[in-house]
Structure formats: C-alpha cells, structure tokens
View 1: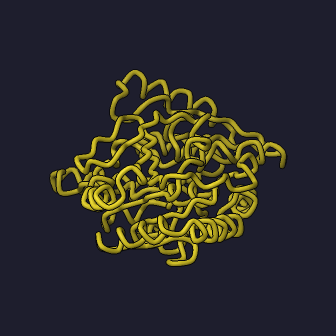
View 2 (view 1 turned 60 degrees about the vertical axis):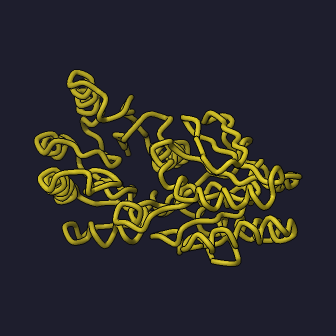
Length: 341
C-alpha cells in the first residue's frame, strides 16, 4: 500500500510534525510506503509560483496512490477533482477550526468568513473520509461528511526522559508556543504582577517561542528561541506549564497539544477549561482548569507552595498522558483508518 501525505507545513510546523511526520516510521515498519509533500513555508506568504509548484509535486506523488492524506489544506476544488481521478481514496485531516479565517473572526468581513466556510465544506464533502483531532471538530464536520473519525493528537514520548527532572529551586512558570498566541498569555498580566509583588525573584516566567515576550508586570522573563532539538530540554525547567485560551469557536477547535507536551514531561498543566482541555486535564488531579484570574492565581500559588504537590500531580499527569495520548495508544487508530482505505 502507498500513502501520499500532503502536509500543511514544513517540519517546523507542530501540527505537521505531530499529526503526520511522527507516524511515518511506524507506517513504514507496518509495510505501508509513505510519500510526503511538505508545504515549505507559510500559506499566506508564498507566491503563486511556489503554491503552483506544491500542487505539481502533489499531483506527481499522488499518482496511483492507494490513499492521499491531506493535512488540513484547503485545496482548490479543481485540484481535488484531479486527486479523485488519480488516487483510490482521499483522507482529510483536521486539527483546527479551518472553516474560520483566524482566531479573531470579528476582524474579518462577513464575506470572507462565509467564503472560508464554504471552501472548507466543499473540501470535506469531496473527500472520502475525514480525521479530526477532537469532538468539537467532529460535530461540525459530520454535518457535511458522515465518515468522520476521531484521532486525538499524540506524542511519541519514547525519547523523553523516563524520570522527572528534579524540581527547580525557583518557581518557573512556563509557556511554549507561537508568538501569534501571545495575546492569550497577555491576558494573565495581572496574575504575573501579583506573583511578582508577592514573591519577587522566587518566581519567573520562561517563554519558549519564535519572538521575545514583553510583559509590563515586572516579573522576570527568560526568553528562549524555539528549536525542535532543544524544546524538550528547555521545558524541563518548567515548574508548571500554562495554556490560557479564550472560549471561542476557534479555541474549541484546538487539540490540546501544549497541555500534552507538559504532561508528557511530568509538568503540571494549568489551562483554560476550553474545548478538549477539559478531557485531557482532570481538574485538581492531573492539572488545574482555572476560569477567573483569581482562580489562575490560586492554582499557581497552590503549586508554588508545595513541591510535593507539583511532583504528585506531575506524575499523575504523565501517567494519564501515557494511558490516553501517547503514540503507542493512538497510532493503531490511524493505521486502522488507512488500512480500511
């Protein structure tokens, strides 16, 4: 069997790494030949020539493929029709609310929002099956495509340290992600300010991202440039891992990857109770799900005051991750869908 994967981004794109690329060695070991067309760049920044070249490579590598797996790209309808002619099955993978133009829908005209949704619906109607990363996505997609399968985001933690690193002497409030998501983090400025006023140098922020994070709270900030080879080592410094979100349709389309990263390392996640976060995190057991700023402050202070609690909850978070979201648990779900195709 041959499967051609058309990815949403290059290796540096987290969803491409964890929704596609990490599975390829395991599929190959199971006798499934994998061909990959990486989208090398940001979709909005590439010129028409680069996009055209991507479609040419996608066409060539999809010839006589048993399965073409499209990772959340909204391909032109005419190209989808070609893929249906030259391949046996088309599977579409979604791990974001791709029918929306972005997190701030209010910033787009009604025409743009409707055009984007119409394009997404056309794609899911014209593929054979859809794989989604959470139940909110499934509820939307199944209105237009009956063959929808839930495959949660997972992490191959086989190369992760098996024992939790000794807790840092100072309380490290950590966050990892794209600078595009800094607005979520900035909503916690008042919390950071109170932590700084109460605990001074005992507490600091560590931000792993593509750009420096600027805070007016006065708290010490340690910024580290994201790198795929060092992200795991850098995150091990975290005492807790933050995942603040606003409750929106866009946020409910997210698949909890940040929380899973923390949990895989035995780091206690403190996340907004939005979407799949409420399934991944057991409030008060494997992490905290604060809603108000007072609850955010209480969660962080509770963990700061007890390294024993940090370790206990971190161990439980890691165990829950391994039982539900590790690659050995999730991979068979994907393989079954591909085999059936």
